[in-house]
Image (cartoon, rainbow, N blue to C red):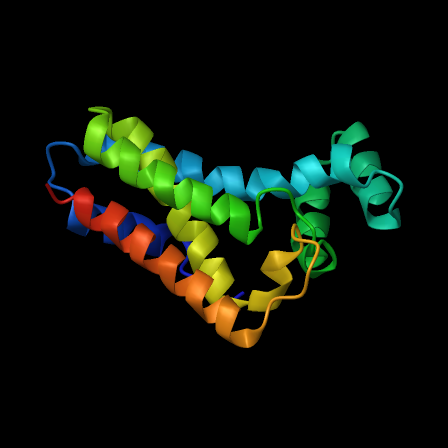
Length: 166
C-alpha cells in the first residue's frame, strides 16, 4: 500500500527512543498500529453492515474463519473510503493528542499508542488520495487547502515524534 510497515515503524521508534523505555513504547506503537487496522473491522460491523463485502467478512467471522476474513479485509481495503478513523479530522486530533501525551504524560505506553497511530495515519495520508481523507467535511477542499492541512498535520506529527527523544 505504499506505507511504512509495522516492522519499519518499530525500527524507527526504537531508533528514536532510548533502549530503557523502548519496550513499553514498542508495545504502545503496535497497539496504535492495530487501532488503524481495527477501523476496517468497525466499518464492517457498524458503519456499513449492508454492503456486500461487509456481509461476506461477517460471514467468515461467524464461521470462525479468521484468516479468510482478514484476507478479504486486506484485499478489499480500497473499497472502504469512509472509515471513521481514516480522515483528516481524526488525524489532526491524534496529532495534537500525541503532542500532549508526549509532553505531559509520563507513560511510554500511552505515547507509543498515540504516536504510533498518528504516524500510521499520516503515512497512509501521504501514500493515498489526500482529498479522500476530507470526507467528513461538507465541502470540497482545494489542492492548496489540502496541502496546508497536510503540512500542519505533518508538523504536529513531527513534534510528537521528536518529543519522544527527550
